[in-house]
Amino acid sequence: MNQHSIMEVTKRLLKVALIGAPNAGKSTLLNRLVMSDISCVSNKVHTTRQNILAAYTEGDTQLEFYDSPGTVTREHLLKHRLEESLITEPKAAVERCDLIAVLVDASNPRERRKINKGVLRMLQDHEDRESILIMNKIDLIKEKRQLLDIGTRLTGGYIENKLVLEDPVLLDLLRRKPLQSQKPTSKYVIELDKDRPDDESSLQDQSGGADFYEGVYRNFSRVFSISAKEDDGIDNLREALLGMAKPVAQWPHGPEFLSPCNSKDLVNSIIRGKVMDYAEKQVPYLVKYNYRQYMFDEMNSLFIDLQLKVPKKYMVGKLLGQNGVTIFRITNESREKISTTLGCDVKLRIEVTSTEK
Image 1 (cartoon, rainbow, N blue to C red):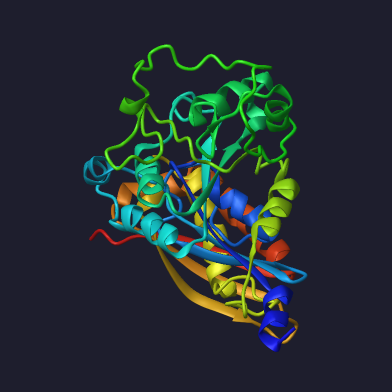
Image 2 (cartoon, rainbow, N blue to C red):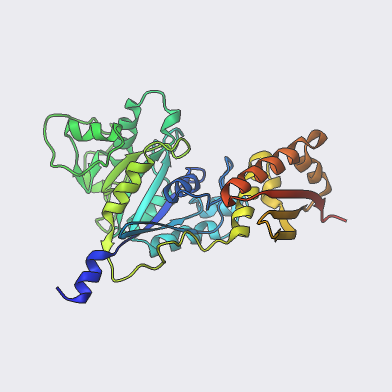
């Protein structure tokens, strides 16, 4: 065996794009997969505005993740005056990846009925890329049998364009194991959407590609059900991704690499997440962050003096909250999270001001 062959079998790599509708839980999932708070997490939509790169290395295998902004339509972008990055960044993530991981909020009635149109279009445009379906937030679903119905609805009962009808395979879905493609049998019959036309050819796009009808995609290679928030099913998902990695001559990052984000990026991500959680309506989307001091002392304690700037005077009160309750929660919870993430003592001061004259 030559040296090149030895290199090929000793290093493996998988580049994964995490895409999905806004608030599907992509950032929480990324943080769980790499076991660190890399990406900003909030219960509000459009928290992530740019692709976030992170890596996880185990043994001879490296996983490279791109956490992308929630996929939106052009109409939504214009209506809410959002950045162009919400459209361009998910597309860029898919272009860079080997695997497209589509995350859906299984607790959301709309998401579990059909796959996001923008996500479907990216899947259609990159049918040569392997893709998986990840049903998230299963902790919010009381009847776990519903997961079978949701998975069947979003895939049309197909895996890798093959109709999956075997009962034991479908039960794997409920056990949060990868749903592998199998040959159809008559043991278990799935009742597909009654509104589907009889002509199967009408379910195909003009290029003859994967099913594009009513939010269904038939070419996922596997289906997973997880709860990123509760850390349920994450280990199985990570293990499956490690198993899907391909041999490479070298990794793009060293074995200790986690993210290009420095400590200040992580701090800003944490504070921004808390502002998104506690500030009202459009206010958190308009806040500008001005760090007047960011310094580690000789004891490795971190001192932060941060100014939050909002465009209107009335927004200052919204951000402070009654008797300062809101800003107190933001400051206190941010400080605790930063201390845990960076492993050091933290002193955090936050001032709120307006740029309006």
